[in-house]
Amino acid sequence: MMDALHTVLRQPRRSLGFFPTPVVELRSLSRFLGGPRILMKRDDQTGLAFGGNKVRKLEFLMADALAAGADAVVTGGAAQSNHCRQTAAAAVVCGMECHLALGGSPPASMNGNLLLDTLLGATIHWSGEYRKGETIPQICEDLRQKGKQPYIIPYGGSNRIGAAGFVEAVRETALQIGPEISEISHLVFASSSGGTHAGLLVGKSLYGMNFQVAGICIDKGESGEKSLSQHILDLAKGNAKVHGIPAEFSADDIILFDEYVGLGYGVIGELEREAICLTARHEGILLDPVYTGRAMGGMIDLIRRKELKRSDSVLFWHTGGSPALFASADALHT
Ligand SMILES: Cc1ncc(COP(=O)(O)O)c(C=O)c1O
Image (cartoon, protein in one colour):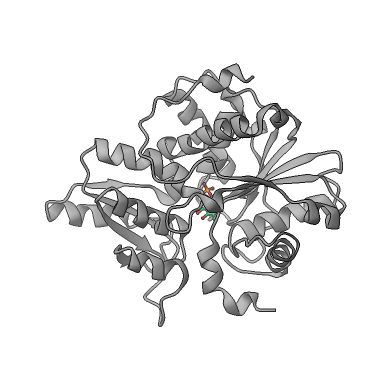
C-alpha cells in the first residue's frame, strides 16, 4: 500500500494552502459518547482566508484557470458560501478578478463569509432564488462582452478537476498517519456538491485503502435535479477516467446518510447546536453551523445508534466553514 502512495496525479496544481493539515485525536468527545476512537482531519486549517476544504479543490482549479489564460473566475453559491469566500481569496493570490453569483438579495448588514467576500474584493451578483450558480453563464457572457476572459468554477468547485484535490488528500493523510491508516474503518464528512466525496472515493481506490467513505448529506435535493448519489458516482468515474485510474465504481460504493437534513440547507436545529457545543466544550474545536455541525451531529447519532461501534476507528473530516458561525448568532446562542 505504501508503494502506491508514490503515484501522484499529473494534473497541474497552484499552491494556495498549508498542507498537510493536522490530524488530531478527539479523546474527550469519544469518551463522552462511549464510542469509537475519533480522529479529526483539520481542513479548517488549510490556511487561505480562514481555510476549509475548497482550498484543496482550488489548487487544481486555479492552475487550470491560469493555464487557460483566464483573467477572471466566476462561481456561485449561497450568500454565506464558504466556497465563494475561498475562491475570492484564491483569485486574489492568482491576480484575477472574482465574480460571485450569490443566492438571495443584498442583506441589511454584511457579516460572516459575505463580509469576507467584499473585503477580498469580489464582485457580488445577487441571484435571487438561484443559489447554485445558475446565473454564471450570463455573468460570463457579460464579462466576455467587456473583453474579459472568464473561467467558470462550478458550484462547490465540484467537477473532475476540483475532485482531484481530495484524491490527493487521501495520499496526504496516508503518508501523514503511516501504516496506522489501515486501522481507520470510516471517513465521515459533510457531502453537498459531491466533489469532496468523489475525490475521497477515487483516492481510496487509487491508494488501496480499506475505510468506508461515508458522507453526511447536507442539502435536500430539488425535484428534477440529479440525485447527489448519482452525481458523486458520475464525478468519481469521470475523475478516475481523466487520471487514467483503472477503478470501477457502482452505486453500492456511495454511502450517503440523508436523514440529517432536517428542515433543509442552512436551517440550524438541535442536531447542529448539540454537535457544535459538544465539540467546542470537549475539544476546544469550532465546527460550522451548515456543514460540519450537521455532519458531526449525524456522526454522533450513528454512534448512539451503534451503527458506528466502539471497535471502529473513525476519521471525521473537518471541512471548515467557521466564518458562518458569525452569521448565525441568533440560531446558535445558548
Ligand atoms: C464547510 C464545508 N464543508 C463541506 C462542504 C461540502 O463539500 P462538497 O461540496 O465537496 O460536497 C462544503 C461545501 O461548500 C463546505 O463549505
